[in-house]
Length: 229
Image (cartoon, rainbow, N blue to C red; front, side, top):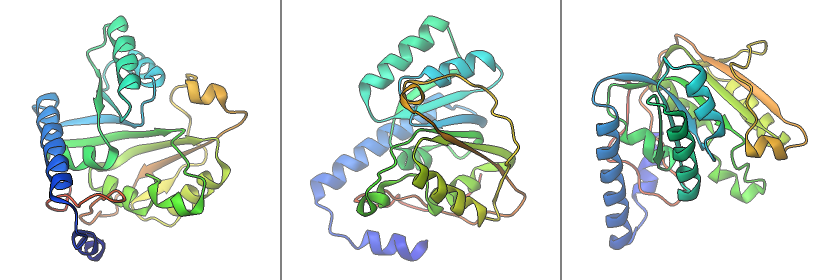
């Protein structure tokens, strides 16, 4: 993982691009520092879409602090309107790329649950590098997820499902739970369009998680690796 970060850092990024990335990441850190003024365990939805699921989840479980992220502004605006209509104070939406969100989190924030519902499968082999659910994601997530934290994944793409299943099956920090119940069934826009889908649940084990970093394709690495709080 460290070697990979060194190779990425050797790429000659243009100064203007680096400045834009640095400003975006600094703004995100400020946003999250305001959102999480004290240490807190959160429910994190990676790719919240139009907010259908997370708003309903926050409504059904008011004791849980839910945060959804997406890069598409229209989705976030729709999500925010749904939350506001339900008058929820335990549900928030942030415009952020998943890897940058992870590294911008204040040190006291941990994951109680991670939800990834119908992510872009990037079906072409040459685009698989863009998938969020890879070994580095689970390694990094483990550093902020205490024993017993849950990971929930659902997709209508068979090959992506099998890829994630194979990755998690080999990990010591996460363990598959084949018979675990799905805490809430609430159809999203993407699920409604899917003729069929598959679901996966995993739990964080007690196995120690080494420090890890997440770096997206074509992005400079964070300033330093992130480890557990």
